[in-house]
Length: 124
Image 1 (cartoon, one colour):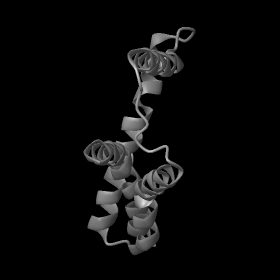
Image 2 (cartoon, helix red, strand yellow):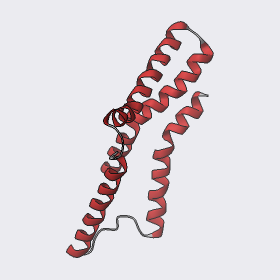
Image 3 (cartoon, one colour):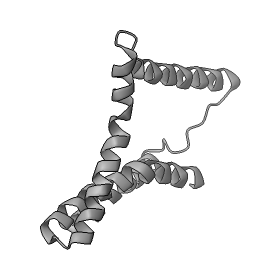
């Protein structure tokens, strides 16, 4: 079960590497704007994308307490899974420890995996 967990956590890095290989083979790797107009258009498109993502997270038509609860769902889930994992390891319950270890690996990837992948992309 642990091997599957490790492979699953490395899947985004593998898919990113495969995407880069395909981009190099097709000649689209490192495509940069050729002039100032293209660079400005690219920046405008990135700004619109960021604004669209921010608009998705807005909750204009709900009460403030509902928005706060919604915002706390992920941190609360992370905390509960981590507490369950520590309890399972301390109690010596093997099936529970196996299950919570898999869940905790998802938590660790959620907390650190995306940033690590972005850091690796930036170095490349």
